Length: 237
Image 1: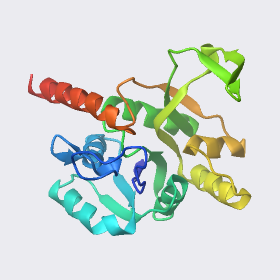
Image 2: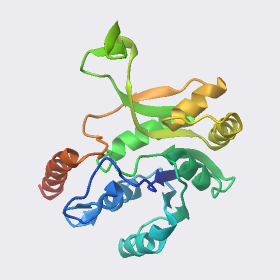
Image 3: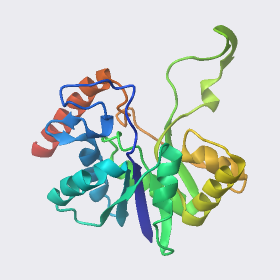
């Protein structure tokens, strides 16, 4: 079964600010000498079920990124395509390049470099059985519904999950979801929200991990450095 991973990485990183690496683009910020994007690619190169990786980038970053990827000597195909102005456009651009022999598509945030290979295999297996599966965790904080800074309800955590990535879907299902969103002018915050609108299939949830953080602000880098040091220590132990 062919499984393609799409990494949307065309964002401008407006929330990150400019760090020591000299860039505000979070996917290119250096984490112990390598861009975050490269750390994420490395994780998927280690996943047995993944057959190719497609990275969606801004046009001006493509040549530079290709050089970085080539330097990694990847063990499976890693392609670079031009992304769009939004995450949704970037994923759709990457989808258009996939061949018909791809069974499943996994979309993963390029700035989640601490995804565990075992978790990737679990969510791919679940999507292989059901057609659609995402990674998610139950919130530990109490969640309030508000309107204009006033609380309207306290939501039961029993029925809530915080969506993470990868989000894995059958190729044709995901294509239909993107086509419907484009037709309706709908913009979703993740791929699952587009698939949910079709009302064709239930999206299953695989228990995620607190370590699968999304690096979006400068303070996240401190935690990222800690997680990476622990990973390195574990590999050398």
